[in-house]
Image (cartoon, rainbow, N blue to C red; front, side):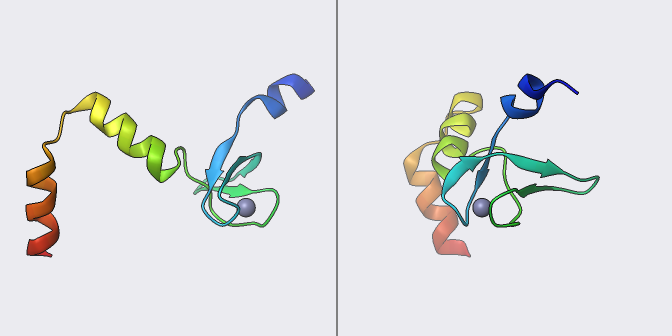
Length: 68
Ligand SMILES: [Zn+2]
């Protein structure tokens, strides 16, 4: 096992509020620091990623919030 490969990737832990190293399981990935489920992106980066895929107008976002 090459350590460089193991340490290369990190994911966002909402509990630590950081990009952390993670443990991979079949269902999900977990933070090595606190054991919480980690995500691929932080909420900020996820918004930026989604915006890069499909431009979303701000007024349509507001309308969705009011419906739910
Ligand atoms: Zn964590």
